Length: 303
Ligand code: CP
Ligand code: NVA
Image 1 (cartoon, rainbow, N blue to C red):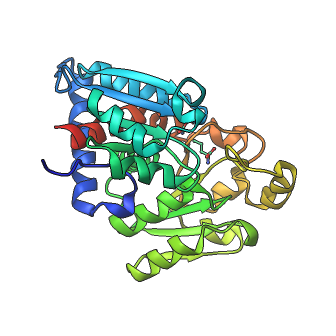
Image 2: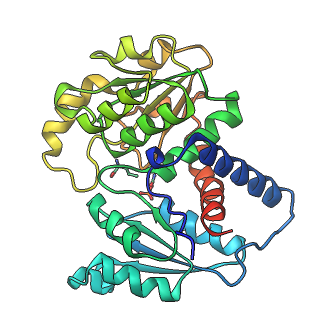
């Protein structure tokens, strides 16, 4: 039996695989919107494990599976034996006997890796404290729908160097765009991902001031200042305030620059209403594209 095709992190996949996933997602999006209703997942089941809250990931995976003819089982941490200490390895062995794929949202990336090491079906990363690859696939799809290929473009991340930022770094290396990171000194992305990017020829720049980082950018991205599980919210808000994306900051980017946020947003913190609701914001398309990009991911894993 061949190894399952896991979707764990963007650095683990080559550009060709990422491009295949996006192409399949786009194909399934257009099939859905034109009224064609293919059912490639007829008889297939996805188990989803959520050890953290979710709106978009949970609903978009469930709706996506169902639209393509599949079924979903959803488990919260406290409803499963994982919450009482059953190991990810044993959980993976059992779930692989019932389901065709497993998606997990958890804190520790080691749990995801354990699950993948012992599952005989594909495992999908639905966010860990370290990364959020499904989100960035939807973001790339959204950018390219609006502006064409992201290759060679300049993307600016302003805010916390968190899990979403890490997946942006992976994507910049794999898909060939420039990424400028404007993060406070104490909230930089981890050294391991920056070293990986440098070793792989990434065009990644750490810039102290958000105004300098957005100069001439094609896309400005941010995320919450207090991720799920983060401590010291007040301290974070204080040191991240200079990185807020407001209309003045957006004015420094290119005239046709887009704004993205994975959501949920904390309006008035990392982004102002004016930017969220303004003409450059594509956050609702971005949220919708979770559905379509994940159909591409599921398809790549399952078909
Ligand atoms: N962006 C995102 O993953 O949203 P949820 O936490 O609602 O799933
Ligand atoms: N960085 C955020 C993303 C939420 C989708 C978090 O981990 O809470």
